[in-house]
Image (tube, rainbow, N blue to C red; front, top):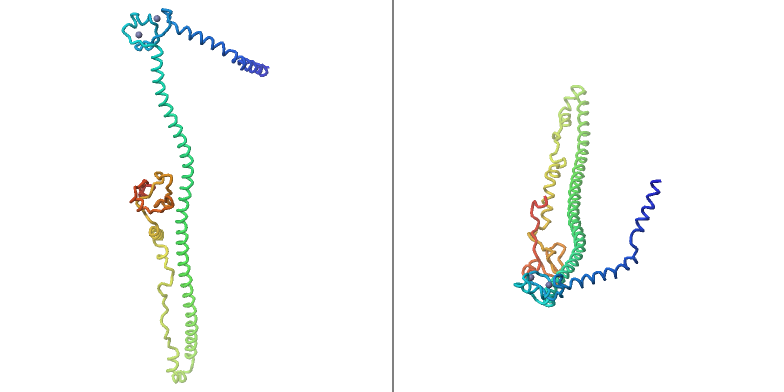
Length: 298
Ligand SMILES: [Zn+2]
Ligand SMILES: [Zn+2]
């Protein structure tokens, strides 16, 4: 029951609002009232004379009798139409100032809209530029990585090959020396006479002229060369390909007919290209921005 009773309340509230035609009917009434009020205001309440004058000191309308009264005798009183003309002129001046300011504000609002659009454009362009610059770094790093890995693989291949060759040569030497050893052992089993008769030949045959095997130096991969201070060397090389300029052009100070280059080092106007130096030698219409200050973004 409580719920259903709240509904009619809402309906009543809505119907309580004055309908539109009712409001319109009220307008002439209120105007009449206003008019009568104004008529009453035209007459001096004390003297029932028309308020034809204006007391400058009191800043209020008065009648001719008021002017001669004690209250206003010493005051500056002017005809009300004169006072009104002066005051209206004063207001017109103020209004003119306000209108000028209004148009300035409108103009500024337009500028604001343009700048808002420009900010979006700036953000997009700058983002693309940053991405482009980083792509250069990625490209450099990928190329550098590939070159270093390629160098390492070539060294590994060469050294593996050398090792294989050395291994093959050792196999030949082992085989040859094994045969010599076996022959000498056989010779040792021969009868003394026979042995001594052929001793000179046996001795020569058993002689090993091979030098002691030695592990060659530099056979392994030069890890120190490939890994030592790797990042430092890459960074140093990267530094050598990156140009640092102590200044760049500030696009925010460029005039509308100027196109500042991608690297902010030059600008174009009317299809005539000028380099940064040329720009400096001209009337310097563009502002200069300081280049990257070390540590600024770290
Ligand atoms: Zn009066
Ligand atoms: Zn007065």
